[in-house]
Image (cartoon, rainbow, N blue to C red; front, side, top):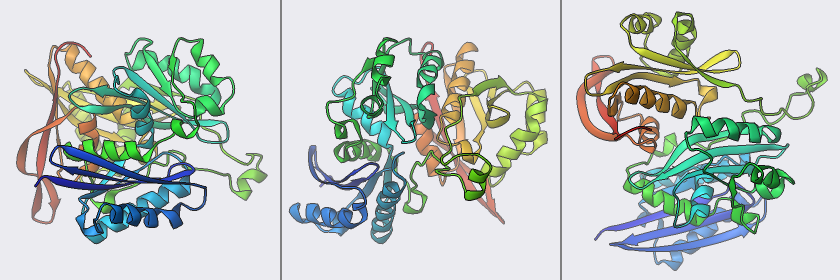
Length: 412
């Protein structure tokens, strides 16, 4: 019998939610439980989960996977959901399905007509906002256009204006999220710019619901987008929540603010190679060396870098072949990940390929790199083949490479 049981947790805000999604054949049933009170997520989560399993006549051993809303959101809440999901999955030897909480908000408000671009703006406190952009594709489900990042409230209109050109969506933006309700004047300001707003009537309706976390987890499961428990992690976005005593003594105040927007995309040149190679060494076990990038530029391969203010935070290089473009290497600094840098570089690679009259972009990735595989799948890449013993793995051992390809017809 085709039976699937997914237990889901969502604790990125004040409501602690648990859901049990059961699929038997083509029939899906969803049970949920909620508790609204900050500071009690850790105490409430497991008892609510056990109650749902008991109501369904199941025990933990019947679970197929555990899902959780990975944020961004409250730091403590995210740690609770991720930790419980990891613990259960490790004990049961089952996979974890991380689901972005902001993506859940987009899916909740999109309803039965998800076409278009969906911007989610969530209150991050300190007059800052978590912001992300998603798009729904009939063949690939929900896709991340701009991964969650932290913005100062005052920067939102400028960020959206930049995004209209970057995301190539015209002005067809739908804006969701509790920031529209929390920050007085924001909704009116965005309405003046002709964006379509759907904040919801209730503050909790404008935040991630565990029922949607479970439904998105089902889609992710069907697409093969799961991770092993030890690789599950929250999306924090805010790396620094307060200044130290020494920093405050230097006049830095109590809480750091999100940096002013300063991302820019440039063609890679020789002067970039030291920084590019340094980033590559941070993110790869067997990295390209500086001379490899230099040889690529000499050979006519196309490369790009993304800058944030005075530093490079990401890069990509492609090689054109007669029928498709080959993504040779891509990397993003660890402290700049989950901010849309990788998505922007992928989009640029596709724009380049289409400008050359090519209809596909291909790459190789280690099967063990489940996080990268999930990222590529979210952006329309499919596993189309395997190269045996392609990557070095250690002394006298090698690892296969998955070939993943994205195809298209016409322009982006």
